[in-house]
Length: 258
Length: 258
Image (cartoon, rainbow over all chains, first blue to last red; front, top):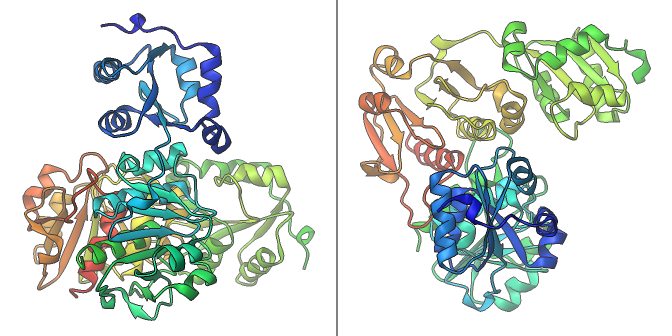
C-alpha cells in the first residue's frame, strides 16, 4: 500500500472538514474530528462510526497501517498534501492522520450506579482532563450542563485522550431538574471551596453523583440547593485548586467508596 | 489618580518586555511577567521584587488601584495604549495590568520536611497546575530537573495562579545526584503506571519526596534506580492520567500522611 493509492480529498470535503472546527459546524454535520495516531487508533477500536479518514501525504508507516485498517472496515480513506492537510487540522503540530467520527447515539437510559455532573466547566482542557480521569476511575456516565465546553471540540477530544469514546456523555439543559426528576434515588456530592464536610467524610451508601462547577464561579446555587451534600478538599495555601485536579482527587476518593 | 499621570512606556522598554516572552530573554534579564489583576495582586503581597508595572490606558478601577499601591511602594508605573499594551502581553485576551517581577534569590538550603520533584514535566499548563496543587497542600519546596517547562514562562505563571510566589522552586541539573547527595535521609516515592504498590499503601515515616515524570516517558530510569519506592494510582479505564491530575491525587494522599 502507498498513499497515492487513496483518492485526494476534494475541495468541498476540505471545506466540510474545516467546518468541524466550530461547534455549529459539528452540530449541523453530527461529526467531529479525531486527530492523530492515538485518537484514530482509539476510534478504530471504539463503537463510534467513522465517516472518513484523511491521511497526510507524508504520513508515517503507523499512520498508514491505521488507515488501511479503517479501509478494511469499509471506511473511505483520502489523501491530502502537507499544507492542505495542516489546514484541516486544529492541532498546531498535527500528526499525519485525522478521523471524521460521527456523534454517538444518545444513551441517556444507560446511566450506571454513579454519575459525574459538570456545571459550566468552560475550559476545554479541563473538561477533557476530567473525562479522562472519570474514565480512569470507571465513572463513565457524565452529564454536561449548559455553559460547558463542547465535548466534541478538538481540544476536549485531545485532552480526553480517547476517553471520549468510552464514556456515555449526555447534554442536559437543566441539571437541577435532572437531579430531582431523573435521579431521585441518587445522593449528590458537590465540590465547593467551603463545603460542609471534608472529602474523606463523604461515604455514599447508594447510587451517587459528584458535581463539579465552573472555573471561576463554582456550582450554581440552584444546583447546590437540590444536592445532598457539599464537600471541600482540605488545603492551606493556594486560593483554590484547578477544577480538573479537584475532580481527579474527588474521583480517586469516591472510586474507593464503591 | 488617572492613567495619563503615569509616564508612557518607551519603545526600548517595550522591546525589553517583549524579550521576557522567551526563556533566553528572561534568564538574561532575571525578570519575568506577571499578567493580570490576580497575579499582580499576588506579586504585590509576595516577597518578590517588582521592577515595573505597566498599565493599559483602558485599565479598570481595580487595576488602577493595584498600580497605585505599587507606586506607593516605590515601584515605577508606566502607561501604554491598547494595541501596544496587547503586544507586550502573552495572554490572548490580556487584562489591563502587567508586572515585571525579578527572579527570586535561590534558597536551596531552605528545603522543608517534604519535597516535590518534577522530572521533565514539559507542558507549561501541567507544571503550573502542579505548582498550584503543591502550594494548596503545603508542599512548597519543588525541585525541577532538566527538560521541565520554564517555571517563569507566562503560561506556567498563569496556570500556577500566584503559587509561583509562595513556593521555593529550585532548578537541579541532576535529580539522581541531588537525591543521593543532598537528601540522603529522605524517602522518595515515584508516581509510575506500573508502580510496586498502590498509592494508599505509601506511608512515609520520615522526611520524604514525591517524584512525577514526563507526560510521555514518565520518570527517568536513573532516578527510579535511586528512589525508595514506586507507586501507582489504581484505575481501570483510560491508558493513563494527566500528570497534573496524578500529582494532585498523590499530594492529597501524602498531605494526610504528614
